[in-house]
Length: 230
Image 1 (spheres, rainbow, N blue to C red):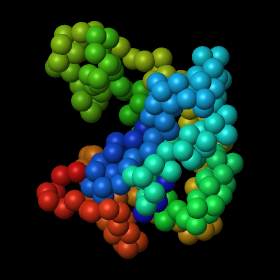
Image 2: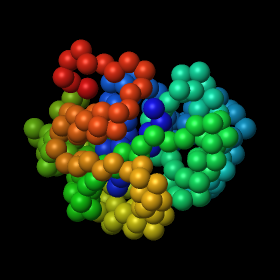
Image 3: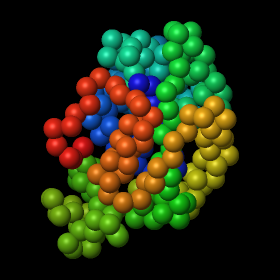
């Protein structure tokens, strides 16, 4: 199975891709992970990407697609993948199609996590991160710390990251509307898009996603049904 996840920032694409990949024994390919791994390994593409990132510039589409191409050639991804973070624009979508067609393959489904824009703003702008351990993340509404401003885990100060401010989030949504939302229409014209609500708990959204994939008659690897939790 070859699946692309799309949706607004804050829709939970990354966490859903991780859970679905586990349930379906299919690799989760994240562009963020691709960048970090290529930079860590010092690959040619990683070096090029790092130069753009250090200059505060967007990584060119050709570099992103190049990294995805190499990752998809690895043995665990030959028969399928869950792609998160790419494509980000129609050019990348067309490049991905060409890449897959060159190997005699094609996408099976584009899973759209549907979320109202104001909920996306609420989710992202409400995040607070511990200064002492960035893995400790809270939310002023959905996962508030026991003591305001202090991490429940270690007592460190909680802060709002600069890219999580409401102003920044709304700008990100504008960029999404301009560059990324046309991807959904691109795939919808090919009857590939399946939309599900991204509201509710992680487990609820995962179950909706699994139902949607089953209704398409798709499986990847061995579906894990040993328990009801992702």
